[in-house]
Image (tube, rainbow, N blue to C red; front, side):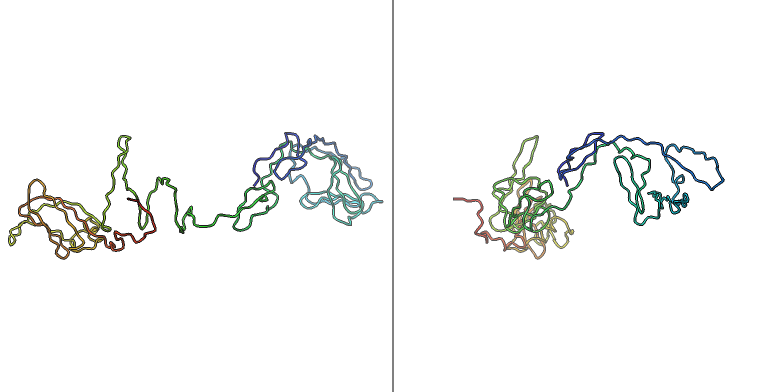
Length: 342
């Protein structure tokens, strides 16, 4: 498409040419023309002289007032083959002394229309109608398809005709796709920030510090996430009331049966994503309100808390994640540089 709206002729002028950019090259005045009255002749058979009355048609002429196809022949003894005819649709009128030997043509001479064809030329006594005195239409597209760059190159500029002025090669190598696709290689952001990221799905994040930042009364507060040396773990924190007396053991107990936990509950999820065993599960217990001797036991799919007295406790369950062996403390990737500690 053209770069901008080209210049136009002013009102009352029309362009003699338009360049490739859509600008008029030269303007000339639109002629103001008038119509002269035509000479009308009528013929009748010998001995008959009827009176003819002509009514001037004003306003727009309808299709019904113009015959679609008329032919007048034998106008005078010396011109037996003279005729005038309007072709189908009324788009052209031809008058000649003899039947035309070729196709009729329409041309102009100055302000006069000339209809010609066959054996002669007829010049009707009607001038051209005045042309519309409006601005010239603006070009909307290039005249032809311009030259393009070859595959693997992009243009540095385009001239007025739409041809590329210079081409340069596209960069190669790993890049971050703008929409969809799969990225190959690494991305170095040069210590810049990434903001407004909704979801991030990765296999492993190497970070100096993870800081869930809270803004309270327009002041930022950091709440740093803890890190664990010893593999990937999952945790659950809860409370329990140890009130049931085991008369055989003479101890109070509280039983968590993971087989009876509702699917989708927090404890159910924790149990599903850990490597569940005595060696991979750690339990921290704190009595609430008073001292009590409390311990835990893992029996099959049950976690049992026992106490020497009825008491409420808070507990923290920490378990090695199901894939903890894939993430040893000594990182498998020794090429990546994380936080350097001397």
